[in-house]
Amino acid sequence: MNNLLHKEGDAYYYGRVLDEASAWQYYDVLWNEIEWKQDVVKLYGKEWITRRKTAWYGDNGIAYTYGKLTRYALPWTPALLALKALTEKITGSTYNSCLLNLYHHGNEGMGWHSDDEPEMKRHASIASLSLGAARRFDFRHRTTGETLSVVLEHGSLLEMKGVTQHHWKHQMPKTTKVLQPRINLTFRTVVPLV
Image 1 (cartoon, rainbow, N blue to C red):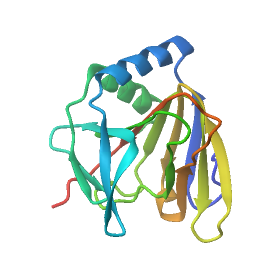
Image 2 (tube, helix red, strand yellow; image 1 turned 90 degrees about the horizontal axis):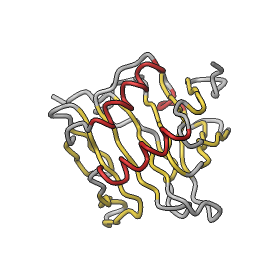
Image 3 (tube, rainbow, N blue to C red; image 1 turned 60 degrees about the vertical axis):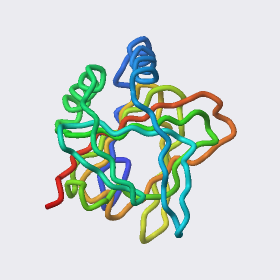
Image 4 (cartoon, one colour; image 1 turned 135 degrees about the vertical axis):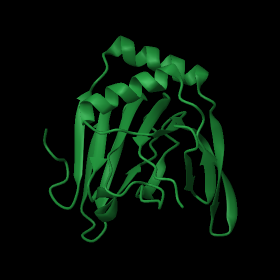
């Protein structure tokens, strides 16, 4: 498996890890069973309601704060547990939580950021499983500004680990070319803050 990042980080694109039929079956289950909500994010002193919807699932008592919003994990569903087990088998890592994003179309995206909140286990694996519309995913080095992109296909898996979050930012840019929805699952390890 080749590292997408040639320096200061580790990112691996495994391609499709689910066959077409299984990927669509999980997509339908998650679309209907997940408790999707729009986030309220505070930026520059203002509150914004995101267009994309999110959900936070995980082990009992896991909490996660981003955009000054604290979420408490909902209990794992059977579908999420099955996808977590598959992801753990492929990556060789374990995860205690999953942040899900539902993008209704290409006009919903995510700007440049790093998943480096204090609750995140340092240098741990973050595995991103994609269902639905294929979308471009970009990396940008914090110091050099160098960028690279990968298209995340339906049923595919991307893993980021090591010092990636310290040296690279990532985004999912908006596009008018994608009209279909995409569900993204990011499996993570959160360490409760004391």
